Length: 154
Image (cartoon, rainbow, N blue to C red; front, side, top):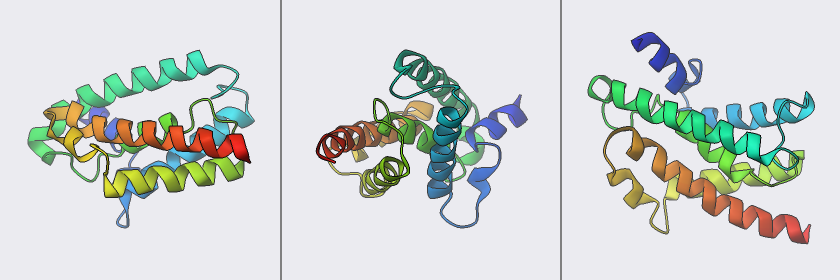
């Protein structure tokens, strides 16, 4: 079970990236969004309920798996990048997927995720897996709001 949890929270090992694992996790999220859209598996705009369901299920599994690994890896270990995937997916919710919107969303999300303004830093105070996931979820919400405004004027 430990291997499965580790495999999941590191997003198939991407969290072991020697350079900027959080950024690598966000790039994987962008790639998955593009693949979902390209192969008509899910859409952030035409099937948002299914996409929200995927976000919820992945978040719950991420919280549980992070809880299981916290004693071994430490609080919010850098190899855990499932939170970046969730944050990036939230960023792109209801946004038409183009290379431009994905790029802008990525930049916005990384800005909020790294600097942690507007109460994002406080989310890390939650215990266990919830603390791991909550700050990235809020960064994703802020990024989504700004991105929807930007898209409206593009």
